[in-house]
Image (cartoon, rainbow, N blue to C red; front, side):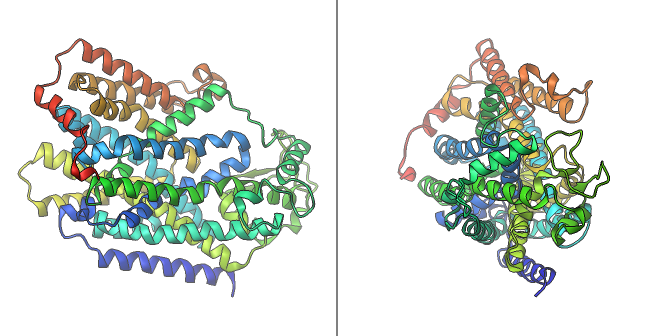
Amino acid sequence: MSLQIWIWIIVGLTFAIYIGIAIWSKAGSTNEFYIAGKGVNPIANGMATAADWMSAASFISMAGIISFIGYDGSVYLMGWTGGYVLLALLLAPYLRKFGKFTVPDFIGDRYYSNLARTVAVFCALIVSFTYIAGQMRGVGIVFSRYLEVDINSGVFIGMGIVLFYAILGGMKGITYTQVAQYCVLIFAFMVPAIFISIQMTGNPIPQIGFGSESVEGFYLLDKLNGLHQELGFSEYTSGSKSKLDVFLITAALMIGTAGLPHVIVRFFTVKKVSDARKSAGWALLFIAILYTTAPAIAVFARTNLIETVSEKDYSSMPYWFKKWEDTGLLKFDDKNNDNIIQYLGDEEVNELTIDKDIMVLANPEIAGLPNWVIALLAAGAIAAALSTAAGLLLVISSSISHDLIKRIINPSITDKGELVAARISAFFAVMLAGYFGINPPDFVAATVALAFGLAAASFFPAIVLGIFYKKMNKEGAISGMVVGILSMLFYMTKFKFGWFGGGSSEEWWFGVSPEGFGTIAMLINLIVSLTVAKFTAPPPKNIVKLVENIRLPSDDDF
């Protein structure tokens, strides 16, 4: 069968499964809509958490970034995996015991202030919209290539699908849909990796294969380093980023993870704190399968790409090359009119422009794998993007319906009314998310990294100090969150959007990238919070007792 038929069959089948699950698990109450009725099995929740976690950034973009920047791409592996461990082991059990399933709700109650709650809602919306922009962009990229529509149309299709099952089923529908999506995405990610590992190294385990000798008798990484040097690129296994920026990006991704609202809510969908811990462990295992494979995918894709296109006749390029050209994500500019592709590190003479986000998707095509494998990868990429988009959509709708309307604007609203408000909020949220997906600030993983920086700058100090520092008061938390988020927004918009006079990478403050500035903004938040708290009234005694209580183990913890 042709590739297009395979794509329609496999993608269509997975969509039918997602929609079927959404109808089966329709939410009938706010409890089911927000936290799936607290009835999810820890293993299923671990799988759903992994799917939520492994977004378009992890599936599509992370290996693509690593394939281009090599060693420097390790910041994403270290930051995202380390961050999840930090969240799961340090913060999630305490937040679960506190009993507030949204970050704004926790902050509002812990800091005994509706102003704190409102600021937290504002921060949650900014973080979530930035994050979801990357997911919608990922969906658009997949659809533009495999369904042969333009990227914008792809974004609209993705909006329609995710809106359907997120509005209908809420967290209950999203959770069970994500279990299915995890199965699809991990199978789709691993099958091509295993095929290509056998093809290039003879080893069926990608994690081992990319560090092994190729079938030609050379170590694959040595071969890739040689290819890079020949073409004028920096050596693949050596980094070009400053150690300071590497540290700050890794830290921003780690602490940003610990403040991500859509991940935290996952620990409320199980019955007990002990189940939350179990699901965290399962999720880490499920996540590790993909994250340990990504560097191998990056090496395989980069090596195959260079050998396929470099110094080759443009007219002899395979079918996949022309198809990716049609999307606008792959461009050949024949500067010397010789019809030969010069893919070089020197921008003055380089003739090939490759979007980082296409590397994983194009990888099986470059390697000449069967059509069903290519179609499977397309379905997996869509699953990864949609799973996270749905989780973020729920955060946005719950922040508006529960934290703003229910807790501040209209406390007397009925359960049914709140559910309607949540669904309406989700509808408008996906419309706005679609706009950001069509007009993203950067490629997928970088856009997501900015969201992590925003989460680090706003939420992390308020959450950590709220749990571990009894003297932290509302004035300190509010001041810290406001200063932190504004600092990050200023730096991000200045160097990513060109606002406030703009600036190039040479003008970064102390050489710190926008992705790494989240750590600086978090430290500013922390300093402001502690300073203001020191010179203002301490929290009430009942709040101090509340903090002490959540730090003490109970029968529910085991």
